[in-house]
Image 1 (cartoon, rainbow, N blue to C red):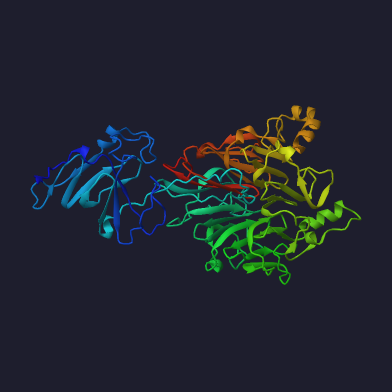
Image 2: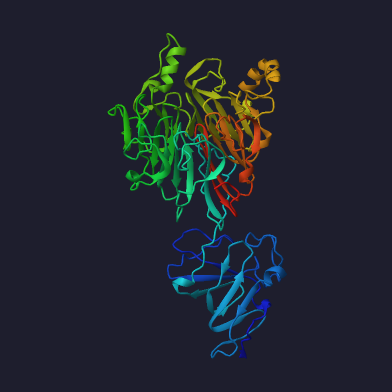
Amino acid sequence: METCPSEVSKEALSYTHTHTHTQSKLLPYCCQEAWTCPSEMELHFVFHTHTHREQSNSFDTSCPCNPGYSRSALLSRVRVATSSTAPGHSCKSQRGKMSVALPVRVLSLLARPGYVHKPPAFGLNTYIYNTVKLPAPAIAARSRERRTHRPPRGLPQVVPPSSATMAVARRDATPTLLAWGANSYGQLGLGHKNDVHLPKAVKSFLFNQRCIKNITGGGGHSAVLTETGEIFFCGQNKDGQLGLGHTEDVTHFTLCSSLCGCPVIQVACGWDFTVILVGNGQIFSCGSNSFGQLGIPDISGRCTIPAMIKSSQDKIINIAAGLRHTVAVAENGSVFQWGIGMASQAKRMCQGKNIPSFLRAKEPCKVPGLENVKVRSVASGSHHVVSLTDDGDLYVWGNNKHKQLLSKDFVVLEPQKIEAHYFEGEKIRRIWSGWTHLVVQSETEKVFTWGRGDYGQLGRSEMPCEGQNQERKGSTEHHLKQSSYAPAIVSRLSDASEIACGSEHNLAIVGNQCFSWGWNEHGMCGNETEENVCLPQPVEPLSSSELLLIGCGAGHSLAFCFLPSLDITL
C-alpha cells in the first residue's frame, strides 16, 4: 500500500459530480439515472465520462451537466485533499482507481453555476459511482432537472385560457414569480394597486419547497397553483372570487386554506368567479353567481368559500371559464356547460329562435351534438367555446360577432366542426382563446390565429393596431375584415412551447424567449409603453431567464422564471 499523497492526481478522479436530495423526489439533472432518495443521508459521487471510462478516456462536452467545458478545464477544478501523515490514510492507485480508508474532503466546483459541494468522502472509489454514508450537515444543495415541456407530436393537448400548465423543474437559479400590467385591484400581488409596465418580482410569494405548476387570471384576480395542489389568490374579491371567506381585495398572494385537504389540479378564472378542479374529478366554485356561473342553483348572489358543484357521477378532467359561464370535460369525453352569460347575448341576436337548454342552465348540463366524438379539452372566450377532440378536430359554439367561429351565423347555437382545410389539412394539438380571438397549434407546431384583430391580438403583419398607422388602417379596412376571419400562420410563433391568452393580449414561449403582443393599454405586453403591439415581440426584461411558465388575466401578465441573476425591477 502506498501512502496517500496530500493531493491525489487529478487523473485519478476524471470528474466528480455530487448529487443529493433532501426530501425531494426530483431526479438529478444528468444521465437520467434512477437515484435513491437519501433518507439515510446517502451521497452519490459520480465519476462521470458520460460513457464508461473503459470505453473512452475523453469527456463528452455535450453532456448536460458539463456544457461547454473541456476535460482539462474540468479536471483543473477538481481536488482531493487529505493528510499524508494521518494514520490509516492510504490509497492504492491503479488506472484511476483508488481506495481511501478514512474520510477525506472533496473540493469540487462543478461546471454548472451553484454546484459547490465540500462533503467528506471515504470508501472504495471506482470509475462510475460511489455511495457513502454521511451525516445530515454534509448534505449539499439538491440538484435540478430540466425537463422537456413540449408534449409528443400528434397528441391533442390544451392549455386553459389565460394559463400555462407545464411542470417546471427546479434548478440552481433564482425562482422568481413576475407580474405586470393592469393592477387596479392588486391582481399582480405586489402589495399595491398601480399598473406596472415592466415585469416585476413578486417578493411576497414564499417559495420554500413549492414549485409553481399553473398561473392564471380573471377579470381582476390571479391564481397560482403549486405542484403540491395548493392555490394562492390575490386581486379583486368583492364577490368572494378568491375563496378566502371575505370580500376584501387582497394585494398579496394568499393561500386558500379551505381547499388544503383537496389537492387541486386545475383552476380557471372568469370575470368575477373562480372554478377549481381537484384530483378526484370534483369541481368547486366561488365568487359571483348572478348568471348561474358557479353551477350551484341554491346559491344566490355570491359565494366566498369554494363550494362543491353537485353534478353527475362523471369524473371531470378539464375545465374552462368564460366571462360568465363555465365548461367542463368528463373523462368519457362528454362536455358540460352552465351559466347563462352566453344565452343573454344569444337571445338578443337570435330573435325568435329557441335557445338550447345548455346555454340557459344554472347547473351542469350536457352539451348536445358531441356524441360521436371524444372531447379531451376545452377553452373559452368571453361568449364562445372551442373544444378539441382526441382526433385533433375542433368544435365551436357561441357568439360569432368577430367570425371567430368561422360560421356565417351571428350565433352558433350547437357545436360545429371547423374543417381541417383552414389549417392546411393538419390536425390540431393545442388550443387557446382570448375573449374574441382564437389561437391553435397544429401537429407540425404551426401556430394559427383568427378572430378579432384590431388590438394586434392576432400577431400578424397585415393587421394594423388600433391607434397606430391610422392612414393605413383606413385604406385597408376591407382587407382587415377579410383577413381576420380566416386562420393564418404566425411564423414568429412556430415551435412555441407555450401560449397564454388574456382578453385581447397574448404571451408565448419560443425557444427560451418570452414574446408578447396585442392590447397594451395597461402595459401587459411588458415593453414599458401603453402602445398596442401588432407583432410578437420579445419581453426584454425576461431575456436572461432559463425557464418560463406564463399566464394571463384579462389585462395582466404573469411568468414564473428561473433567473441566474435578477435583471428586473425589484
